[in-house]
Length: 602
Image (cartoon, rainbow, N blue to C red; front, top):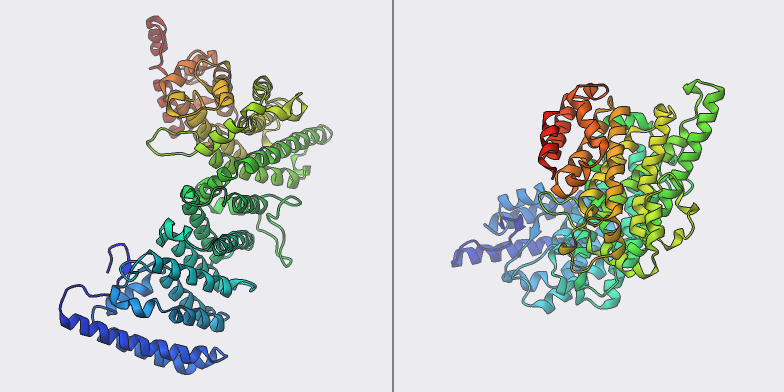
């Protein structure tokens, strides 16, 4: 057995007895396969269930006992224990397993029994094993290409034109995942181009379909989330493909990435633009409050999905970054208008209970997902490494830099209180900076609502999303170090580089956001903690801290904390510890000796 969960059909030590046992195992197995072949020519499921099932299991069991190491009890137990075990037969199995009739037989069996959920899962597990086959059973690359091509053809002919059953989703996703994971890139790219294109198109359609079904499972609050599991597996497969995209024809993943990205966004937006929480067969989703109390934060719960979708968004940056910007600007403008109308309503009737929150809640949920996807698209969060602007994002900004008016871009960035569309020349702005500006606009609408005493109408979750995004963004983009990149975007370096007015302005803005949040949201522990983590990010690097300590608001925050003045003394002990950490880090910034002495004294 392989240490990496390989289902190794072979001997573990030399000698004739092992070979005889192996041959006995093969004879027993092929008696079982012949039985399966007879069954595959029949039309119904019940025949196998009542007659053949016992015969096949008995023969396979005898094969296992006779086959010694080949199919021993240990291997069978392991085979049953996991769906992800891989198949690594020795070269003695070559003639049998490379015979296309064996694979055809398993596909044929599945087509006949697929409506029986238990048996369908077993047959798909067998196919997933065949899809994972690797090792000395293949004499050369040509054999691998032929085997993979036949496997892909069998898969496409099996699932094209059918409505996939719930019980098939995970199994099909495992087959695809194994094909993409186990076969080298050189083998995948050696497939006939038409077949490779058909495979990618099938993967695209399945991903979108499973994504919609996974969203429906959430609406119905199902216990068995088979489509969610299958969707996760397919997104992981996409991640594997696009991370190796230099091995594939240039641009071959752009259109599929657009389709998968659009589908993900649509599933997470409310109607009419999206399909989130639409009632199905008269069954509506559970109350948001009830759900939110039961599960962890979406950015943790769906981090793998968001990572994959973010990477796909980079592959199709020309489409996805402007799309996110447009959707977020639209939702924030609608939120601003709705809060204004609600404020007017409250002036006539001060009863908060009379406010219809449905529109607000839908907007908050839309903004929540748009900010999460934007954060994962624009930046990674590599633990312990220097975060870099993703190469696709940098290339996208550079490619369009000749169309960009820097002054207009900086004006939109520095005017979060204004609609971007109201600023002349707004269409000639850098799209990466414009997406950040949309998040800053969201932040500004939130801050103005708190100043207008509308805090009770706001969503703490949106507040968390904003500071989470700003922290993730600041680690990567703020004071961007040109030496770390082979080529740099002029708009990005002009707006956020060292010694730029843009960098100084945004540090000041983020600091004001931190102080405002700690004043307004001191009772919301998670939001307060995320806010202080943003502050830590601003001062944990000396270059950023040097700008922070030049802001008057930093000194007033330090004095307020030292004197235990409200509302800082109301913060939880864990948040106060993080705040103390930030204030200590800030003390190591570049200051003249008198100023530094004064800082530590206070």
